[in-house]
Image 1 (cartoon, rainbow, N blue to C red):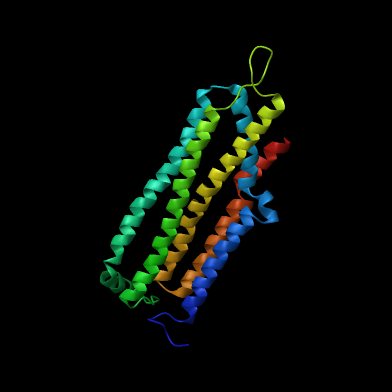
Image 2 (image 1 turned 90 degrees about the vertical axis):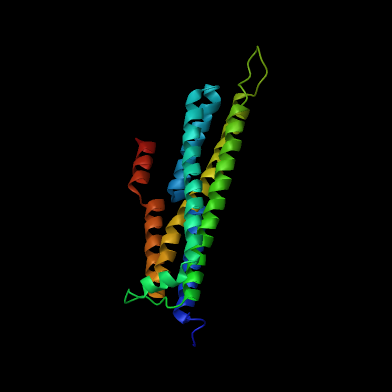
Amino acid sequence: MDDFYGFGLIDAIAITWFFTVWFLHFYLINTSPFRTKTISYTMAIQRERWMLNVVARGDSPIDAILQNGLQQGVLFFASTTVLLLGGLVAGLGAADRGVALLQEIPASTTDTSFQWEIKLLLIILIFVFAFFKFAWSYRLYNYILILIGASPKESNSDEEGLSAENLSNYAKKLARLHALAAKHFTTGLNAYFFALAAFAWMINAWLFIIATFWIALVLYRRAFRSEFLKIVKMAEHD
């Protein structure tokens, strides 16, 4: 197969492999039957316990502090992503210098400005995707904070409110919304990891393939085999 503007069959295979692995990873931890074994699912159970405590405690500054801490973490990544995007877009205008630097690496196959720009555009698109996920997660956490503030009280003989069962259902709804916001944040964070794999394409397609596989293994271990997950599950039974 002839090269297409400097890209060969191996580059097409590497791109296909990259997006296939990314999609399968997302499916495995979010949709597949195996999602119940992930750290995200385990922490969703803890979120439900937290929200049950929220509605039981009523107006407590502790929950506001915890929620604000989560939001600041999301905001940090959203802001950092904007800065990264600015630097990467600026890199589009430094194609000649970038190609010259890469040509000093013996294994590099990035020989033209067009190749540099296409590969850099892929990384930019990944970070744009991550930014949208972080921004939406931050907005969801804001909505959740409002819902926490609107949490009803348990009914008694003196005032109106919800029954204990309905109050529990409200807390579970809050937990599900909280887990959804966390899902978007985690998806954006995972995009950072896959962007690191995409950087390997700047060298060559073979390194891109290997880096994608390595990133997938790292994320799999953190989702299913991390030490933190083992300890949390241990606490469930002890």
